[in-house]
Image (cartoon, rainbow over all chains, first blue to last red; front, side, top):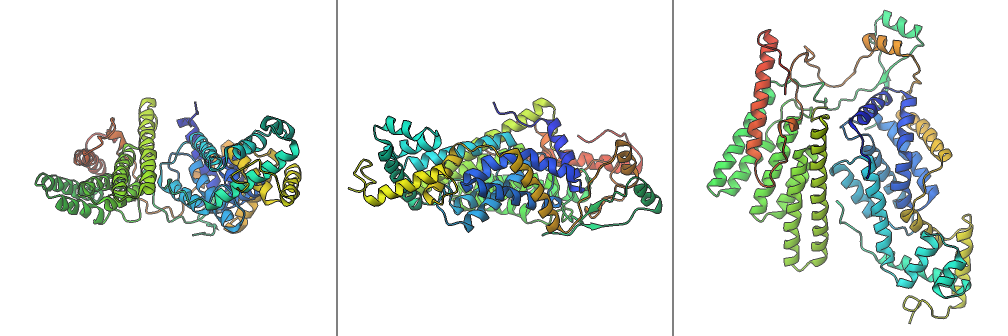
Length: 203
Length: 199
Length: 161
């Protein structure tokens, strides 16, 4: 069961935000650190697909938050929803600047940014869980578009991180043949993602 | 956008001496110019009541017109609430926001009844911008939005656009789930005797 | 039949070379490979790893200094004891530009606030709006009356609902 923020936690956070808005650097640092992992692991890393890009984006998110903290108005739903929106925008800018194929299209991310500003802000733990589930759903949707054997190769080697030799054995091929299979699986996945229409089910 | 923080020296000499003695702490604050929070600003006054009275009158006018099967007339009456000048311009009074949200919800339902699905969609989306916190007002709007999306699903299917119809249906499910989440959040706060409404 | 249709079709020489490159890039992140990047993106979406403390600290430090530079302000390191906080609250803290302030600062008066507390049950799916606005208007009219009395110094001092 996901633990939601209690009234006492919310009040403590509100006071921390007020301090940060008054220029208290220690309070600001505490706020940023508190949600760093949630932003990194459930928002930025899945969407940007690279640890380096996600770390850069996290730093940029923090810079924007510090710059604009005076514009934040406390609304009894905690600080995280606003942080998340800023992070999504940063990820969107980063995605637009990159040319690599990733699981998210810029249009998808634009819709998430819009949704974050119009849907009910959720408790951080709930939102984080939803973001992670949504990312898993997206991965499965992508893998379901390719041949089952390719999807298996990617699941076992990449997601489950099983050793190459073990996966090859399970698939009934030599390790060298498995290398070719994985290469083909990647090419098939890339082709499927490039053909995919923008997902506009989330507004 | 992007205001500079500035230092203001309104403290008296005694306060300056105090702050210097304690380490010279200065508070830097920028002029927010943002809407005042309810608990800091507007006192319940004639201006607010005038708006609430107008809204009440227009809703009852809409009741009578609906009873006479004049749905366009009812919508027009409610639109006058939305278009009316708001009390304390520049401030977001919670009562006003919640009344507007309810008004948009009602207009959306009336427009749905009139087969104006696009109009209904516009109204619920606009209404949601007025109530961002988890309250019954928001839960109700989300529910109405879910119903609007169900109507849109049917409209799209009838037009042969099954792909968009499926997307609308998925969106309807998301909205109805969200409405439940909001209702549960409100019920949870009521049961906890926690913060209610006020900020 | 292409390799997309038959995963086990015999590979071409180019495929063998490319698969070797992919394998090396997966084993060594410093080697450039768009395909390896895509597979890592899949991994990061499916099973994202938490950020290392060192990297988080770095991001916070960098964010603070960049953000402060951009806002052009000076963020003061605040470090004082509780007694000063109390004195400061009494004598130094002032709010600037936070919108119009009522001359009497609203002491003892009912303020504008959410009407959610007036409703203990979830709203009906259809209708109910005019009944709700009735309740809101009646409640706030009572507040207005109390506020008038309070300003005139008459009547009791029951708090707003």
